[in-house]
Length: 302
Image (tube, one colour):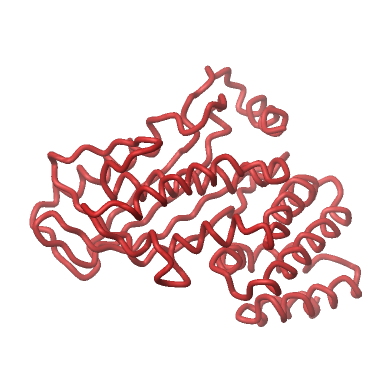
């Protein structure tokens, strides 16, 4: 399915590219928010190593073409730095192309407020599928698999399961190590990476993941040719997400979904001529995403 999706992109680009092993096309930016690092070259080196870590390895056994690589931006804000120990926040935004268009839709928009690690020029970033190397490597590998899993969920129902399983292995061995204790790997906070993964893979919340497939593959990817059918699929997807939210209100992943999608959902339904559908949408979103209600209400003013 993925190869069919990207064939159009490859033909339009008019370039024959060899198959690529790498799945990610990441851009990394590191800023100093509330702290000063005396050696700017060290930060530049760290940024380059993180970029290479994400982009320079195979995370799956699939063969990705250049146009298929998942675009993501990672923003790391350093808040404290002492003797190679860094406290930071991280924001990750991943996008997915929409079939037959030049439009890229947000796939993930995640914030990690305890992205903490130890780094010196002597420390090598490396990944082991089953053993802890260092916390920065674990953090990066964990989010790599989260991005790939979410992307695969949009191309086939529950297609990301094996990648979430690998993210769980990373979470488990990172939580059990004592070299770099990190509460983000445990259930200490309802909005950390532990709960991000556990909520996403909870069988009771499966409607959220199947909703991703309906939203993207059955909705966004056919919107240009069949906008009414696409809106119907997207509304069905949002209904599934609402059901998942009823089972487990205000989970981190549902929050991240609407943070990434509020503007897009508004634009999709603003041009609909089905007033009943618009009213249904507003009622649904009032329940599941009241924080963005002002945006959604513009849909019925058209």
